[in-house]
Image 1 (spheres, one colour):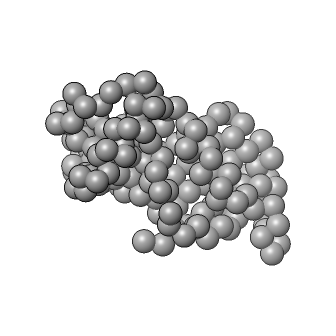
Image 2: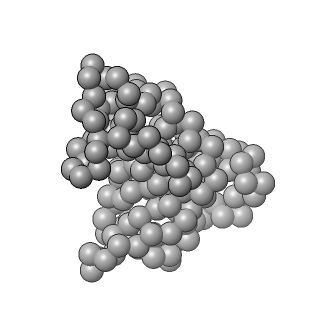
Image 3: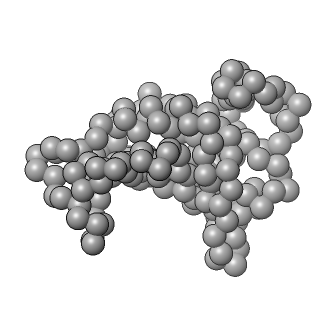
Length: 162
């Protein structure tokens, strides 16, 4: 498991976000990790070559602080990621959300495939073996945000080192 990211208060002018005093009110990374691990749907936002946004739901597995997901090789998501791997994922409910910025790369490690396929089957009751020829991506975060109904007191930004 990678080291926990650095927590701080996000800069969100106009939202009443209170400056953290010695880390008080910051949520632990475990809070975000739990929501990312338990999410059924992740909203993946990519950028089209024209610069226009593209946001679609994907199923995936949160493993070692990274999202592993698959999409069709001809999908808009795959075409966008081929041109620009920088993207954002979001998960959660309306009162507790995690938004993660990062980069998605094709999985080149055959050791990740069985982890992905087994975890995917357990989580979604869907066997990915017939889809093995489709691309699998690993999304690694650079920055994440935890947002709750107590936004002013608890909004947290995590910064990752890679």
